[in-house]
Length: 578
Ligand code: SER
Ligand code: ZN
Image (tube, rainbow, N blue to C red; front, side, top):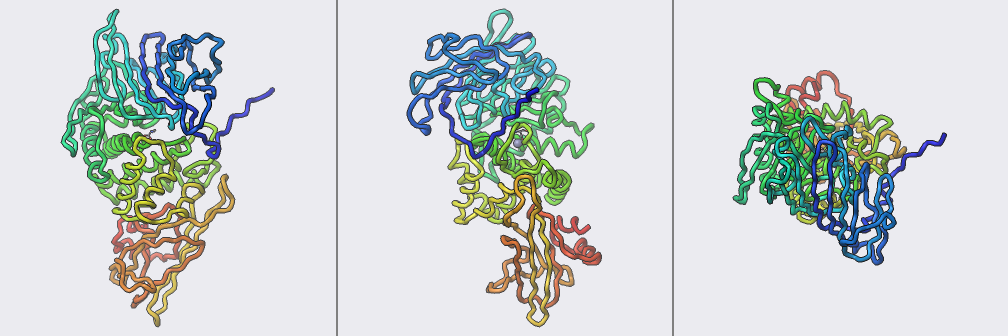
């Protein structure tokens, strides 16, 4: 028997799309036993791919093609090629309009990808490659388009009809049906498309932007859950304010919506202007939900909201770049939670989670770099490495550049790439350019898997009053690579005197101390740093705040750990010593 080999997709094979889609106009006719999707795509040849008109290959799965036309000329079966996962047509001009109508079956879609029914409501999940189960399309994140979406459904069963963007019209239709049209003027890839239809209730509030304009906020739930939305709404408003204050990022549409659905594969999804959440990440009531559940809602609401900039306005060129949006957004939501609650407790929770789960992934057969080189099925790459280690990589950039330098870098990143689909290299380049630094070696965090080991030893010279720390880094082999090149490891540290106070830290050759907690950049396999003016042997507090995702070892004895537990000015390291 012949078994088909799964196809491996490689980052090195990336090519820009042959065609672009400038406008996408969709009409959905929802029925109980099928749905009709009419798509009009305003397309053109991608000028970056040169001259000529190669065949146009659209993605599509489990679609029943009813008709297709190119610039209003109806296509006959001999004019196109239909395969199980594609539709190929031959454009005749550089600019053209393609119309298709397909029939799909959301009522029996149990994969929860594309358009499906959860209970009595219709909803969508298109990341990563679900949109191809809705209509024929260039279902790849570097094809960005504006969208207008009309939804037509039975008024009684589906009084609420939602899609991305701003509402621009609605009204009654024949046979007890009604329609609503939404317009999303921001260019986005298809994975951010969303549609919801159902008998939903909503709580409404508003947010006044820094610039003065109002945004309408709505959270839609099934009627019985209407009393469990307040915490999510408060969390949303806090997130919007925080992103303005900390990143200078304002919301862009007139309305922002969250919908809670019971059947959902992931925690939540950042569809433009219409986030769809697993109910467990929205619903919370003080009487019945724990503090941890409240914090989870706050964190997930923030995460999805923050994607509006880190993911939607600036998106990923291809799925190898997933950490571009996820690592950055996890870092952003962690900092938000730290600001809203206890910074130290949040850091302890995140590090404990990283060590228990991501370190295990990085030490096993599934170990892969934050930016993988190949995949077979992208849905298997929504991993702890891409999300949590990716967030640690962004945190290290901030640790190395400082808060101000990092903000300069993120400002440049958002300004330079607004409306574009980019790579982790572009992200680092913006950080480099805004700060005049070279992060070439640092980028190994994106391309080498495995958890580095950092072995530290000390030497005190009482005559010279110097104290030296020697760092030795190594990284075990992982499936992607046997030999690893040295990483850039930011080590934040302090030196405690006998009273437990942080000593001023002056490295050999420096004219003055640079604070009493500082970041050393370990870049070599073995590297020694020597501090001067140290009158008595100190006790080092290493890797404060867990400044790098490594396994650190230092030969502390029990009394020294007790001392750090009592005196360390860094909360994380007090916990760590315990
Ligand atoms: N893009 C989604 C998220 O991370 C998928 O879970 O928020
Ligand atoms: Zn995310």
